[in-house]
Image (cartoon, rainbow, N blue to C red; front, side, top):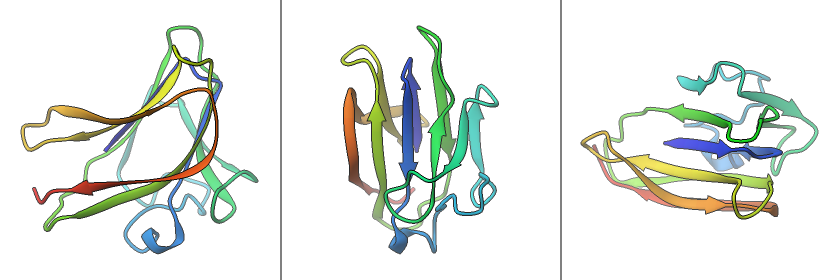
Length: 131
């Protein structure tokens, strides 16, 4: 799963309570619960006080024009299921956006959704195939 924010003011991601057993609620204040890859290194941070569920969420650091922040995790999916999370954006629409992508078996990323502008907390859910 790959979340990339391009030139956005901020993006917040929070996983809902039922997914916390197998995911990351960011309540620890770190990205330690899953093998997150962040690019550039300090592009995402865990913040308290503005979360859809719980007390913490992941947020992009401020980005310069043309900047990109990537938050990515690679996990083996042994049987079909879903990935679900909460998303909130505050970007300059339509140019600046949060893009959610899932990698196929070949490793190629496929964009699944895109959010732009002022968006309140919204739950997003996507089917995952095994593999």
